[in-house]
Amino acid sequence: HCTRNNGNMNSDFFHEFKRQASLFLTEKIKTARLALSYVTPAELMTEEATIGNAWPPDTRTMRVISMAAFEVDDFWRITEILHKRFLKFDRKNWRLSYNALILLEYLLTHGPLSVAKEFQRDKDVIKEMASFQYVDERGFNWGLSVKNLSEKVLKLIESETLHKEERARAFKLTHRIERFGSFGHRSSSGDATLEDSSFKTYGRCNSNYNDHQRHEIGYLTSSKSFSIEEGTRRAKGTLKYINSVLRKRENDAESRPGIGDGYTIEDHPLCCNEDQTIVPLLSADE
Image: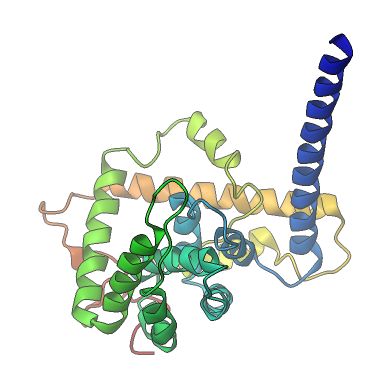
């Protein structure tokens, strides 16, 4: 009996060791890719968010990806990954495309205006996804979830009016959350949570901060002589920069009057307004 218990303990220890070793190796591979190849943090985040996990991309990850999409280079990298995910849609690997669809919906309402135009070419695949049927062993109807999301994304892509309305609604909600502090507590614990999150070594920001960011990051790909330690250092620098941007946005939200108090939705840089002097880097008219 004692021998059997020892065997179980050894087996549990071995499996835990394998799990930790796998996680460690995965993180090292990510760091090496950032340091030694022409890949951006936002690109890696997009790949991970849509690899077909049983859980959907988390809101914080999608938020950072949507911010990065305002930079031209990252915009094309992010959208190219999503295009490939949709092309791979089939009944066996449906989660790849489903997670890509979740991220696309977020980009449509929080990212550059031109996202809707960019994904016109994927409408046929998204329509095909709407006919997907699958109920898991617990009785959850995933087919219905995929159908509902597909139909919503199609409407956002096809209707410019609905697209603008949903963007305005998303902005109001985000502004309200930031205004009342629900998005993140302004304390060191918030930073610690962010550093411990799934995008620990990632970070990229929108084009409004592009010059400073390029100086801070030094473009991870500018030299192929980086060590793993150098890649890690630069990746952490990127994360700190993202933290500072998020804090700045929260502080700005506090200092602005609220919706209905003289602050209009048209003041937001994501809104399409002919009288604006500040427009998105990637506008719908480009």
